[in-house]
Image (cartoon, rainbow, N blue to C red; front, side):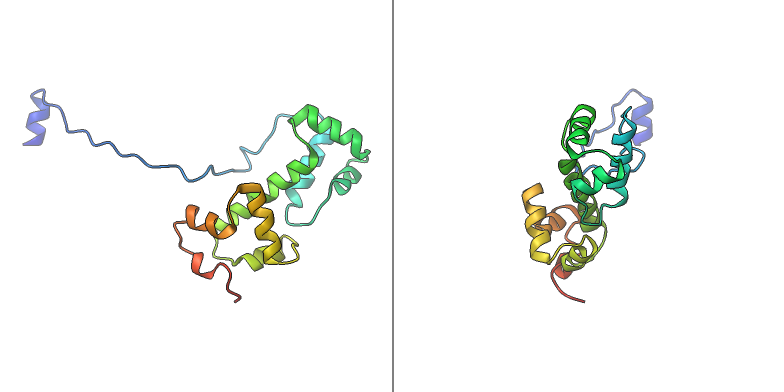
Length: 153
């Protein structure tokens, strides 16, 4: 009957489905930044490859054999923010991904990212995102893993 109505010029009932986005999935192919400065590219690669280590701006400057100030100026010119902000941005992206995609408790994430405690990673995460890791996980992973968040295995 429905097919006949449509063939005879009838209009199908429209159903509007609205889905709220939870996050942007960052892939390596979309992380590529168009930067013409080889030192900045080397620094960005080093930051991405060492995201789980407690790297500092001085570590990044050593890798590209530049002074902190000179690299800072190149970063600001090339990507619009500081080296320190980039380190934090990349770390938060990786922590966020693990909160969404795994059931690893926060204390294990703290160990993976060389934080001194799960309280430290929780403060760091909240300062950068405005949410605790538990709030983030509950919001973006459908609460699948929230019961195990602070429990030690």
